[in-house]
Amino acid sequence: MKRKERLINIGIYICYAIIIMAFLFPLIWIISLSLKDLQNLFSVPPEIIPKDPAFSNFRKVFDQSNLGRYLFNSVKIVFFTVVGTLIISVPAAFNFSRLRFKLKKSMLFGVLIFQMMSPLIIAILLFRYFNALGIQDRHWSLILIYIAIEIPFQTWLLKSFFDSIPESIDEAAEIDGCTKLQTLTKVILPLSAPGLASAIIFAGIHGWSQFIIPFVLLDSPDLYPVAVGILNYQSTVETISTHFLAAASVISIIPAVILFITMQRFIIGALTAGAVKG
Image (cartoon, rainbow, N blue to C red; front, side, top):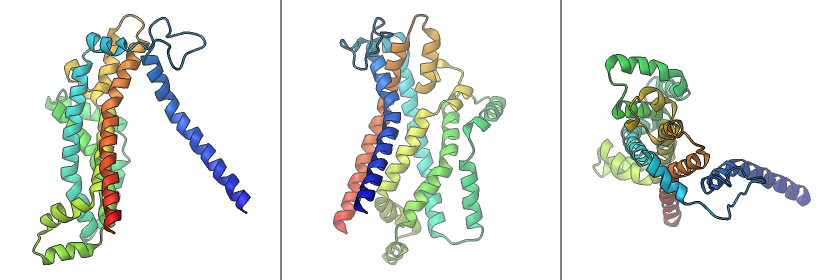
């Protein structure tokens, strides 16, 4: 029996390793391309680790393009998207978690249906609607769409965290004289730090990686986020630019990685503190 369990565990770990490599290999390959010069770009056999890394590729990307501007635009859009999403999703999730009212399940199901709607379906419709209003080429209109896309998922995500907190804590806070808003802000949210950090990670990465919506709605290159900006950079370079595009892609990944690492520390810290207190 133990041998059978050991074989099953080995098989599971082999599957894990294959899945991890399937996700890591493209990242490793693009980092490798970003460190190659034009001569080694198409060398046979290909080098995963270049002998002479061309770190100058990263500097040339900034010199040849508006990558710095694109990064700033993405940070701006993502920041206001995360803030706006939390402002709406947190009270919505709290009310769905704590209140008892008619049609609650139907409303939650309706929120789930909106979450299943792909941006590809609404992109053209949104362009025509925003174009008729004259607001299609604005960051704030893009942020409103991002917030609307994120709210359903974040509401469900935060509701699950709020559900895990006993309602007796709410009752104790109310006995101490807290209003519903004070209970949420002073009691529930500190206990939901891992959930808030998870919501920030998901909203931030989703907003950072959005391509279709800004590609359709934005006309001015100075307003492009980094995902669309890299495509615009590719169309303006006349020579072979694979290594430069790879360098730009690596740079564009770094802020998302920093966000994930930063928020992950909050998640681990909050869970560790809870375990110690328990």
